Amino acid sequence: MRDRRSDITDLPIQPAPIVPAHLTVDAARKVAALRHAGVVLVESGGRLLGLVEARRLADAPASAEVLTVARPIDLGLRPTTSLQRARELLLRARLTALPVVVGAFLLGVVHLADVERALRGERAVDAARADATRAVA
Image (cartoon, rainbow, N blue to C red; front, side, top):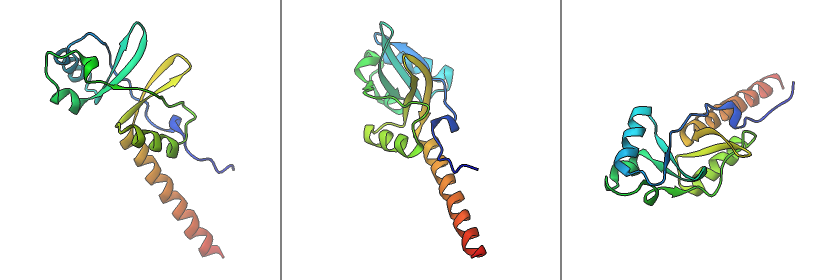
């Protein structure tokens, strides 16, 4: 059996609502609430421009355009991105979620909490293997 490290495909890839850049923050809040979403993606002309977390939407002025409060998305995750790399990218971007893309196709978003939960599980499995190896030796 091959010892395989987990990647993004081992996590729940959540759908995220996509709203047009010109939409108001108030309207984006409503979309997020209806979809029970922790993040909203912002697009214009079919291009993904940014991501807004729910707490940032809650703090923003209702009449502002959602693009003005969105964080630019400079990177996305691939399904083959390792969990450790995904965590590093999420922390560096200071975001709680990042989009998962294959070429021009958006699969959804992966949340930092899911990545960290999976990494804790990996560490627990590694520790159990180490204990079992010591017990046999």
